Length: 341
Image (cartoon, rainbow, N blue to C red; front, side, top):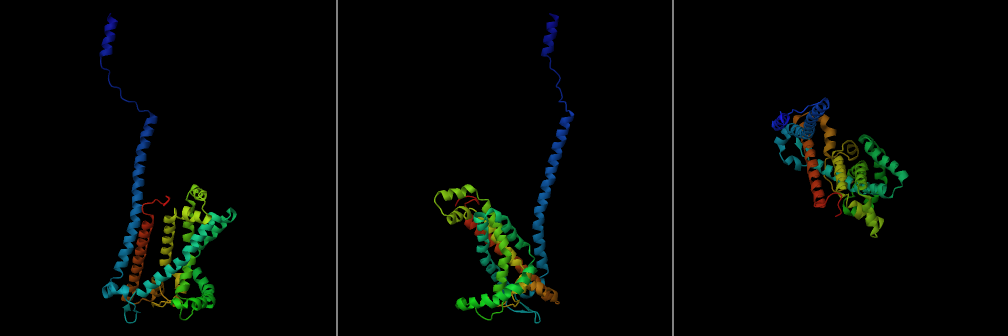
């Protein structure tokens, strides 16, 4: 019986708690987990810094433009943006002709480029043979890589003579009654600047539209065709309607490029600060006047007026993009980008 008592006593007694044994592999796993948590925190901080750096750059640009235009803002106030006089000799500065030239040339280029760019994208995604698709896509993207000054030279030696000899006389003859195509024919002017801008922004619209159209599921196309739709109805209802948010994004990007374009527009717009109804008349843009006259600004007021034009260009860009975002929201509200409306 003694062994039994000993056994029961042993069984009833509390055993000392055993500590977990951490082997070499467990130590490696714990160390790796702690290192991973630290790496995640560093990664998160770096991403936050990257995001804040963009905001910081925008704020610094605005502050610099604001500080370097203090003389012009003090002398003219808000009248600077509605004034039409630009006379550095007498110290009179008004930016309305430049704002007008920037908006008219940009929207004219957009008016020409949007149907052309969307048409090219529709052909490459829906109708182009596979053997030609890569070549045409490469040529379209090559247009975006051509320097602006090369476009300007081509415009002077090729586009301007064509406009002066053929296009502008034709428009004046058949559409002069509108008031948009009348007056002396120079070859250069607002219309020529709009055409060169259209050529420059077509690749942006076409490339982005093509990518968003390719993102539309193939089953969407097959479903629309199965309902008896034609190819045009399939593209219009099944593809473009689902890709409209991306298409408008490409148009916004192209508009941003057109608003800030400098060299090609400077070489073709005529560079005269006036507001004219006719598209044949010369004009001036905000980017062009800064590029042309910044080195000639010997007086502080003149220099500050040019910097304030840069501030105005910045504000116009912001307003146009906000308006475009509101337009996108009004079209796509309540619908996801890939959802059927």
